Length: 489
Image (spheres, rainbow, N blue to C red):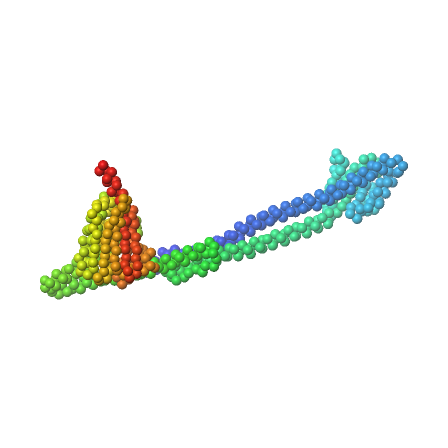
């Protein structure tokens, strides 16, 4: 029942629908923009091309009409010719009748003669003639539909009109021009369709080059969320997606490493807790069955020692928990840090002697006052010295020195122990990490110590060589010493 409740509380995985996908949104947005731009471009092409062709045709017909009107004006001035007969001959013998039709219009707006030989009836509509009558230059133009055909008509007034000849009208078909315009527009539309297809295919290829890795990353992330840290993403390109995949793989490596460290930590802590608990339980049962004074003293000593070990481990875990939750605080004051180092060394002198290990302390002759938490600094010294003794074999040496400059104090703890491998050295201050799993310890003491020194404005540096030894250097600022001297003055 409890398991079902936990499952019920888990957030449901969001399904990416087609309409919410990046490819779909790109398709809609890009095609909308491209389509609008192409429509505008095609409209502009049609408008300007139409204006060009129609303008050229109009200029050509108007030029022909003005030229003919000029010829007729000269004929009128020649008294030796019959003006009406000459007009008739010009219309009937019009050389460009294959391109356009030439008509004569009387004052009543009726066509009196046509180069085609066919004159329309009196109801024939000629808006260009009406326009010519109103125009100052005597020229009227009409573009429109006549008998189902697109035409261009130009009427020009005769300078010396007669009853039968008031104006000349030229009419040409725009069918060829319309055909050319249609061909141009079909070509433009075909090019537009090709552009859209190119945009679609190239865009889909580009979007898929983003979406496919993202889907792969999403799937791998789900596996990581379920605890499967074995999956990695193939890096195919050296671009932003490739960098994201690389960072994701690094994150997966860190998670896998953290998971392994956490499991090792749990195993190590379980073992560390089991050992003193077994000793306490064993001696408690032994003492409960009866004992003499020697047995009682020995049992109580073991119980006390193992209880202190348990207490230290619990305190480390509590400190680490406070650090993780941001509730780790310091009780700051001006303290003699050398005195705290002396107190920490006092705890381990007998221990080093019993384990046949040489503990050398070059006690300084100066006083160092820092602004810090004396209990937490003592905790750091105890942790570092305990590690040095713990990882040093019998017959080894642990040397502790303190050196001061104008601004900082350096406390160095060196040992001739097993050392740390170069690959493990950058990780030894990480939480839960143990470079040597054969030695006792939870793997969080050094992480807590590093955080304490950091909160004091100092640093904890480690140098080590495998099978040679390790040197830990604690650096603390002496700013408070200067402030103290200023106050004394």
